[in-house]
Each structure stands twice: as structure tokens, then as C-alpha cells.
Image (cartoon, rainbow, N blue to C red; front, side, top):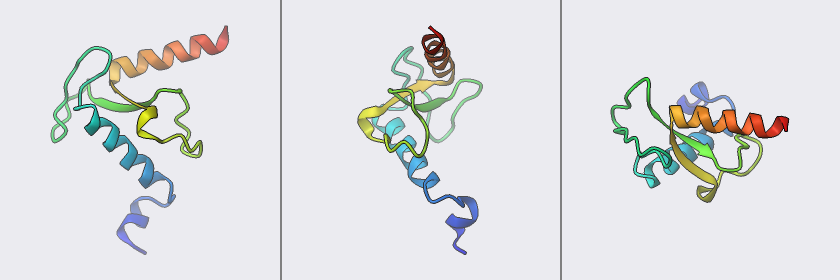
Length: 91
């Protein structure tokens, strides 16, 4: 068993993690909404940087992990985006 398979038993997890790193790198590690910057070598908490699916579907089996569908958000703006998506889904 390779080291990668030891940590990632699902072959689709690694491409998702790579997608997230590429999205954050392309976005300059800066939140698209509020402008919060986070150093990629030393992410600060409680506000870090995450990669968000613009279409709201982060299911790793969805096949929508393109850079165009990626958006950089801080953890606060990411929570707000998902809160808005849930509110829109209930209307």
C-alpha cells in the first residue's frame, strides 16, 4: 500500500484536494468577498481560506471540479455563502 493510499483510501479525494489548492493559489489566497488574505504556509485561525464551488455542489462525485467553478472564500464568507444557499433552497 502506498503512502497516498494509506491517507486517502478513496481515489477521488486527492484530486479534490489538488483542485482546492489550485483554486486558492489562483486566487492569491485572498477571499473574493471580503479581501481577507491568508498566508498559504501558515493559515490563520479562526479565519482561514477555503475553496468553494460556485455552483454550490461540492460533492466529490459531481465532476464539477474545474477552476472556473472555484472561488476563494475565507471561512466566515464561506459559512455565509452556504447559509444563503440553504435559505434559497427552502424558498
